[in-house]
Length: 595
Image 1 (cartoon, rainbow, N blue to C red):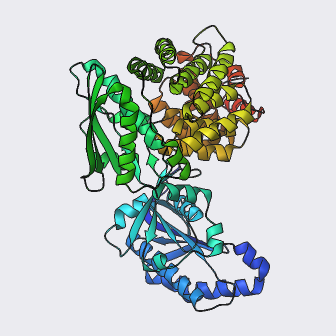
Image 2 (cartoon, rainbow, N blue to C red):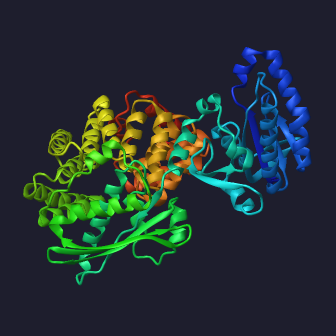
Image 3 (cartoon, one colour):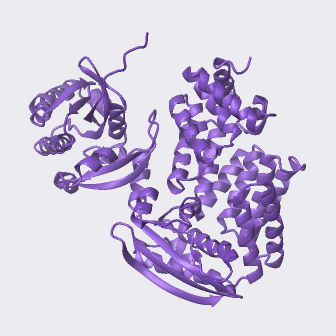
């Protein structure tokens, strides 16, 4: 006999708690309890009731309330915070209570007087990352109340939340009281790293550069147009005052009829840069325009007709004009690095773009082609540090995938070539990325971390580098920091499936099997032949008691990779200890997949 399905319904949930309650109790237990009791009875309970809500749980310093109307829930949150603010302004005595509030609209499951479900859990997570004195709401709330309440909202980006399958859009409510009140010193100290990161992104102009169209007579020149687009992305990414989406995600839109406003929404950016390239011999004509995705208006446009040997200078001009148009201030370091760009050998530049394009194809054959092109580019132009750095990455990639018979010698060669790239140009982020990756797979964690931090200092929007940093943290058992780095990589490159794999491993290592399983499942959509993802997903299913699904994934994995062994995971992933490997084994044993 099957169990009856739980009854669910849609509701708005308000979650609130007090900043530093334990500290306040330690300083003045009687006074804090008295202030809390008075605030609850005089303000909060009447406020919730007046907005047709019901408090269904209290947690000492916090509470949860349910509303049938999401508009009522948001108006209650505003009245709640304004009331608390007025009480604090009316007295100079301690303790002063400061609340954080999260509001979500979602499915809930009533159980007696209590309420359960993701609708409640997301509200609690929003409250947890909220700044005291403020209100954070989910995307579902924003979608339903925007224009219906006297509140503006500031988008803070998507946030991955513990035990929630998919990232949640987060908005900060902006209204009279919240805007004129400054944060207290305690509030500023309470800024969580998650909030700070989301806010830092939201505070920056955000832009995605689409693959430029090839307007040359030769359709095969598309790789050249895309190469110029990518170089502009790289130049923009080095400006710390910008939030720039990586090429992997922005180039996914090539060849499609686009609604630019929808693209902006999907990539979580305000601006789009699009353009075209016409190549004729050693000359290139570039047209570029920047569009505001919020209204479809043109912000900036220009045309360049230059020799290819001056292409770096053109890319630098485009970056400068975009920075000026968006009124972004360069740091002192960024100003000093923007010296006159050197001329480039046209053939070497063409080979660099070809080699980079083949590297991204990520197959054995393409990698061999990339090696030939990048080697020749670095010979023609020894000062082209990016070509040297990418040649190092070819070695690391071939080693990781077992695509040649060189074995571990690949890593020694990768390390030597990366060090040469750094010597050629100490300001080239790819050089430090390559150096970090080679060191990491040689289990040299400290030099790997030092190198990748240098890469990120030079390019604050470097999604690949954040993924390497996540790997370093994960392999050295700093899993929470690893997950944050992986999430940052995904925010910069939403289509980056390797970052999803790393995030899933971090979640698995921390025992968040539901979340890990959802992440691994998402990764398989974009990387359907990944054997390693299936192995970890099967183990996560094992820990969750989902034996049949675990067996299915294990069977799929063996079809893709018949020689796969669990020992390979231990030998391949450079964990500093065996804890994650042991957890993998335990999950597979629970599913009956290994002895």
